Image 1 (cartoon, rainbow, N blue to C red):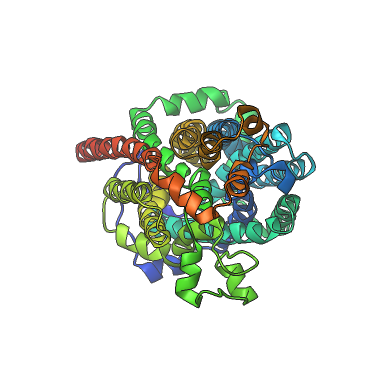
Image 2: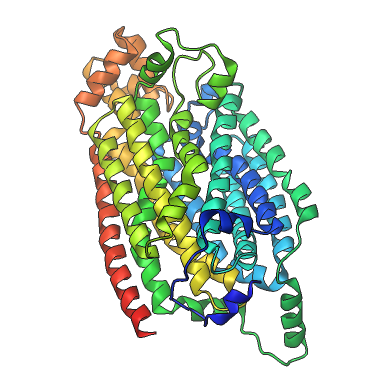
Length: 511
């Protein structure tokens, strides 16, 4: 570990002057790049499933999907969220005690099992159990990776280290949905098999991985074994740290942002698939015929005909921007206090959701995703930097597990209420069933339509074009309301971040 870390007390809230951009990059060790590679591989597999989960859930069984309601999808996402985010609160400490390499290895095996369960059991319970395995594996994986990062960097290069790490993560976040777009056009189970194969590559990275701080960990364990040092039960140790006001307030104020953040990934792909005519983008770029260039189709996330952007391809602008420019935003925000940068990021993200609610024009959705991405770059790497800085010695991975708590609260609530809000205010499936009844179809016939097939039934029943019916349904319902409610939740969080920043400043000045 860098000696610079040792000159600061536990839970030190003072901020340290960062090295310049190139000096920071040059100072990063090989182990930093190894864990970056492992995180990249894990994210390709993870986002391959996560980006298309909502589309898979609502796709009819006749097309290989689950054919479940958005309410049932919300139940799965909520359980997934709570498991994935609350497990690291306690497994983070296990990584500190057992070893990072061991927990990374175990988590990779569990995640492979999750993808295979999803592929082999294409129903509600199969997907739920697969999601639980993925959640458990991810919860064990994260603290070991992030704890390694903290121990392999010093306070002077931490801002750039987290920025670059987040950028590397988003290369995985960019490639995963593109793999899913093309695999799911073959068949849905191919998505899960591909993700299981991709994450297996981490076993190769583990061969080159050397745990930083291992000697100190083993020495500490020996002292405990010999009775020289008493070690609290892990849950008691975690609870002791969790009760500190700086951690409690952090959890509460950032929960709203994570509600906002996860809505983008859990609900926006469904919104784009149902209401946004993405062929407008392809026509603007390549003309009315689209493009038959396979390379462009892959990298832009187009369908196989090359005439429209798939929902995952639209959302991929988020990962693409972060992948190419996060280090620049990290360099810019290194000049500001951490809480100031996070507040700015939250406000930008809120504005993006207002845009999504206000219009279904394809290019405006692109602009909203771009705004959200800048907001995310200002806030997300900073949360890890902040927790890594205030963590006491020997508890780095535990504190980086705590980072997941506000995500757990926010994502857990969004997982259930996000799809529910969408179902109430914007579900094309429900609106199509209502219109079929209005146009004369019997109640029994409407009820007999398989889940996910109501709109295609409406098109064939009325003889009108899909585009004109989409426009009619959009104009006769207040679809933006779901997004305005989500933005309002983010606004409450922004006020909380502002107050938290002022409180922290007072604490820093009193040190």
